[in-house]
Image 1 (cartoon, rainbow, N blue to C red):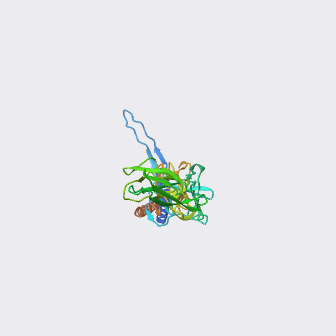
Image 2 (image 1 turned 90 degrees about the vertical axis):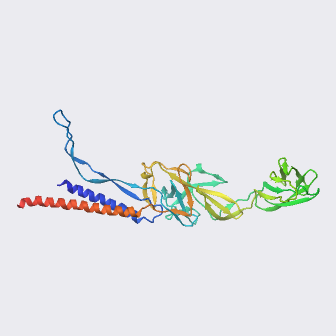
Image 3 (image 1 turned 180 degrees about the vertical axis):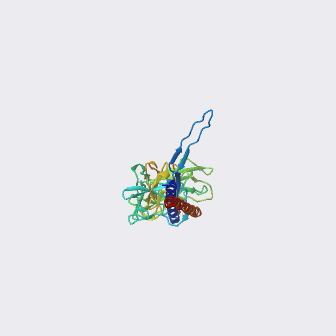
Amino acid sequence: MLRSLGSGISGMSSSQKMLDVTANNIANVNTTGFKASSVQFQDTLSQLLRGPGPGTPEVGGTNPAQVGLGVQVAGIATNFAQGSAKATGRASDMMIAGDGLFAVKQGGETLYTRAGEFDFDTDGRLVTPSGGLVQGWTFTDGVLNQGAGLQNIQLPLNIVSKATTTTAATITGNLPDDAAVGDVLVRDLDVYDAAGNKSVLSITFERTAAGWDVGDGSTVSGSLSYTGGALTGSGAVNVGGVDIDLSKTTGFAKLTTIALNGQDGHAAGGLDSYSIAPDGTVVGSFSNGVTENIARIALATFTNYGGLEKAGGSTYRETVNSGPSTLTTAGQNGTGALAAGYVEMSNVDLSQEFSNLIVAQRAFQANARIITTSDSVLEEVVNLKRG
């Protein structure tokens, strides 16, 4: 049997695999997060017709004489280069601008993906289009539980921002130095108890010969004095159980701008909206004006991204050659930041893929011609018997 037949068959088979890979790339040109693949070829074993010979003083050395036996597919490599960004306007869509993959739990298995087309299900869980549960960590009382292992990212619509007791407030502005002794300024401060009930605490400023007395109208809690408009002393007083910071007040003449600048209490509130920060933190905005960190999306990195196994649904599976995943926060340890409202498109280059299509087609035709030519040679051999 002619060796060329085997070479032609191997060439056709390898070219067919290149056609298959190229066709799959083209078919997924609009697939979110898809990474194009390329075929790597190598020659097969070569038959040794004559071994190498050493040289002598009379005769020079000879090189080995070998006949190749065809081609084979050495591997199919995945190109993890960044795809282009596409704006969607959806707050739950995310794109990784750099390295890293989202971790999703599907069928009890943790898979990884670059496709950030996410949405919330009826339980408020962040999911992929195929139902995979996006993984990360949750906040409890403002503290990220990153050491507790991966959890489902969840944003229940009935989540409540707890009421907080008012314990401190800040007042800034100017108390007029030219006010007459006995003049009184009153500023009302809304305060909250542990149940979220609101009441009004009246802060009074009464002009004295030495400065200003601060209290609640019936009890003096502290005094303020100014030199050249600057406060002397700490400016800290406690009125009605609330610590009042007056350290940034001034005492210049002909200007009355004393006003509340903030306090740390608030009523309970329901969820109004949410946003996702570049580090993957899901931030809830509540009806009481408070913003709270709810969860943080995890990103996974690998020593060898090319070692990941495609698991379908734009996901990848960890293998022995990819190395174990390292889970981290977006923007840290070599991972990219997250861009909400965008998704990463396929990195398929159509012009390159159509060029590869032509090359694969011509290679297939050329190898088919090898087989027809070899067949003609065999036909001539068979015909020798007739002659």
